[in-house]
Image (tube, rainbow, N blue to C red; front, side, top):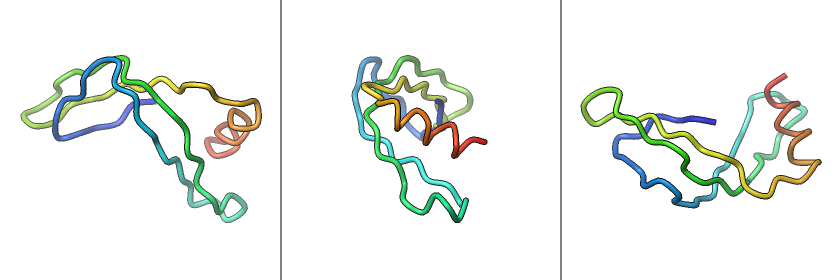
Length: 69
């Protein structure tokens, strides 16, 4: 997963990410751990941050697939 951020984040930094959707059958956001795997400047004060999910369960993986589907 990637996101845009106004400041750089350090490689290896671990964080908690909340993934939500507007799909009515998926009302609760999913909270997962992620680690920064890349950080690239794309414009002044704008960085693309690549995140790698850490320790996803099979249920979490299925829920992410449902959110994206």
